[in-house]
Image (cartoon, rainbow, N blue to C red; front, side, top):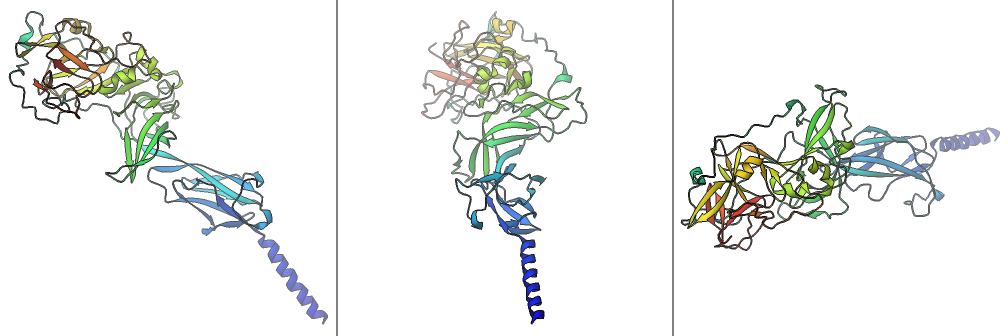
Amino acid sequence: MKKKIFMLLAMVMTTMSSSVMAGPAYQLTKAEGAEAHGKIVFKVDNTEVTSAEEGKEVSVCFEQLDAGFVVSTVSNVCYADWGQSHAPRRAGMEVLDSVKMTKVSDTEWKFTMPRSNVEVNTTYKVQIVIPTGGGQGGSQDDGQGGGQGGSQDDSQGGGQGGSQDDSQGGGQGGSQGDTPGEQQEDASNEATFVEGVSLTMSVSEDVPVTVDEETGNTVIPVVVNSVQIPEQTDATAEAPKNVAVAVAAEVTVGNNTFVVTEIKADAFVSTEPTAVVTKVVLPSTPETLKIEEGAMQPQGLVLDVETDLSMLDDYALLPALKENFEQAKVSAKATSPNKYWSFSCGVDVKLPDGLLAYRAFNDNGTIRIVLLDEVNATKIIKANNGVLLACINGEGGDDYSFAVNPGGQASGTTPATTDAKSYEGNQLVPTIKPTNYESGRYLALKDNEFHPLEPSTTSKVPACKAVLDLQK
């Protein structure tokens, strides 16, 4: 009998010991929104679990991340296990503390399970590797012949086209062979595009996510937060490389299209000692990007800012680019479509080397052009004036950089759209904003000749161009 009792006690003690050794399992939960852009899986010894015993090593694994998104931060809170109910954490439940988490990889974190439930939270970011190169050097084809947006046939024009021959300058022109002196720049200080640069972005809280009906892609507005530049082996911390960064208007990754809407203040502060951002290329967008104060002057360094030619005046006068504008560090690059092309801008602009400026007027049905001596001598095109530009050498296809000339306009103002009429005898009028013009009154340049604009209620002449007003 005693032997049976001892055996029974031994069995009870073994069961109790096993129960104590195993210990209770505590719940693993996910905070609301933690799986916004990916799936979270908890694992113990490579086995998926929803709870774990105290002292066990728990892996937090991220799977099926949305295209373009990466894990930004992983955090947790420990909370009381009231009555071992394993119910989701509710408001009012006692939060005890948090437990230290260790990053194993970009998709895995680990922690040791405490004597409490653990709720994991996660934030995500958009990580986009930008292509090497950049610039807004797309062709600035007038696209205005015939139709106002270039969609209509440019074969019209009647007798108003006229030859754009240089000899029509009368006695005012001067020789076109006098090529202005080339600007000398220190090439060693020029910013260059380098491989492996990426931008970290977050989803905008101000602009809603939409779906592109044509592609079916999810259109996600994003904010540029920071730049990551790899180590430059041909530079040092004492002599870092000057790097140029191009911001894309949008980037499609998988079924997600990320559209840039804003740039934060520290976006271009480089954390890599061997590289410093000295130039930023902004994209062509329907509206200017929202730019925080200081974004274009990181740590006091005034950046060179390059924009699309059609947006040069808009960005130049942004308050956030005041210092850049005042130091003439806002510019636009354009490729001449032909020998002759029209131009206008809402701020004073420096006439690029290799170009000459003309005025144009209607002489009894023939359009004549005359060199603008004032512009060609001062190398300044005054704001809100339409001019005709001519390539001194070649028939077009070359790149030109248009830099702002500060002093004529005040930062923080909206570019004026009215004709300044600074050049006497000039019938060209500026197109500061895309404009639908009255047919029969205006001529637009196309392939080196002026053509009447056909009636249109939808298409517009692009910004930064000029049209000839027959009634001016």
